[in-house]
Amino acid sequence: MTPELFIGCYVRVLSLPEGNYGDPIEEVRQTAINRICRIVEPFEGTSDDGLRTRHGEYLVAYKDISHDGVGTVGFYLRPQDMEIVPATEEVLLLYSDDLWQMVKPFGERQDTPTFARLVKAFGYSRP
Image 1 (cartoon, one colour):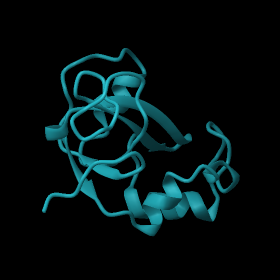
Image 2 (cartoon, rainbow, N blue to C red):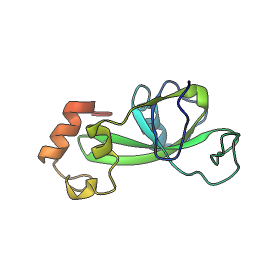
Image 3 (cartoon, rainbow, N blue to C red):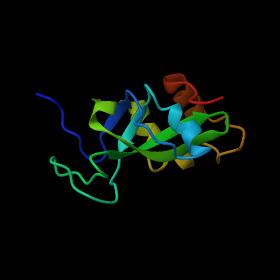
């Protein structure tokens, strides 16, 4: 039985659909391959599985870990561009709405234990 996509589930990016979201978003989006994103509620349309999609693509939130901190970008993936992955403690931490309380603001020197834990678990997306 194949796991089902739902809002809030986590997926590994296998490939990216064509499209250019413009700098700097495109630069960050390109780092998402083989990384984990979270399915979020898109803006229009409905797919066969009941999730709202944009032309059959699912909106994902991607947490970019860089020396500047943790940033978030959103973009769309097709079902064949991703695979569902189980949530781990580190994934839940990275995608927590309260992460901002455990790391320093984006652009400041990141020296918190939480940020170090995220880097250890996921590595940097970008230098």
